[in-house]
Length: 243
Image (cartoon, rainbow, N blue to C red; front, top):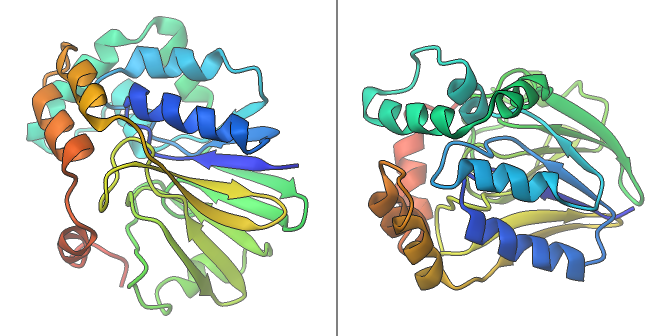
């Protein structure tokens, strides 16, 4: 079985469509959606695209999905308008579906064994760690999982590292990458392959700007055409990462 792990789509339908073409070309049998399909400029359309797939798909919930359907007030004020807009785009059945997604998922994959999928860490959906975070605070979280591989997302930057006896891979972000523009994802079985899909960024930005999303222009410019550099984000995350 070959599995594609798609994380942090964030309503970027053009990026999702491009990745799904590559997924089919790769002969994938199964897809795991690793959380944060929302929020973003095309939330309902992105969900519909995933629901229309003729491949088996399993989902886990991300903090973005959770905050859209059940706001906790943890989101900074500057993002709340766009979160409310995303919530308004959903049908009741969409919100109910998002609420059923689990926080973690275990799946046996040929050539690898049992894989644990989580959004941020196995214990919650908001903790931040990167390729630079020391092992010490991560060992209590990953060291006793009893799996050879754990897959995460949340920070929108790919990495592949080992924590204790567990290989931990960040799938990157399909729709809101940090670093070189493109759509990032993960191919599993029998090996572990970090993938990046190129797509027509100018056309995607035009489609996004044509939406009613409150931050459409900002999303098109800063999340599609010219994302922040990895170095910039690593510096910003350094104060919030696990210690």
